[in-house]
Length: 120
Image: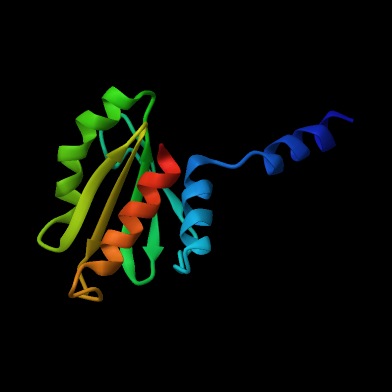
């Protein structure tokens, strides 16, 4: 009897990453499945995938202060690509364009704005 209840609870709960992915989909973007990539940023629980051809990593922290501390190290994930490391609440989004899919930066900007709106 407890197994069906547990399965219902697990499927009924969505992660913060799922909320952001759903917001991107609603905005017309095409996110891939995001997979667990561990602690890509110190203290964070991170998932990574692609959104409309761009590399994205979403990390969730215990509190907003820890997320803010991880914003600067997020730039190491961007590397030499065009991209952004942005904190919003307890989450950090790192987005990079190593394949130069978004030469004007408009897609990056749209993804960041949707993330910030969803993460407040």
